Length: 83
Image (cartoon, rainbow, N blue to C red; front, top):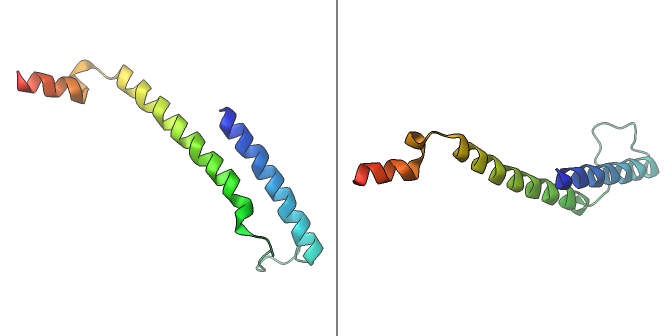
C-alpha cells in the first residue's frame, strides 16, 4: 500500500507538470493536440505501479495457497498421486 501511495503522489506531480506545460504552450483547451512533454515523465509512476502490483500478487498468491484445502494444493496432489 505504501508504494501505491507514493505512486499516486508521483502521478499527481506529473499531472500538475503536464497541465502547466499545456498552459504554457496554449494547448490547455485543445483536446486532440499533443503536449510537448517527454514520455520519460511517466516512467517513474508506471515503474512504481508495477512494483506495487508485484508485491500485491505475491501476497495474494500466498493467501490463496494458505486458504486452499490440502486436496486442491498442487504439491500435495502430486505427492498423493505418486504414492
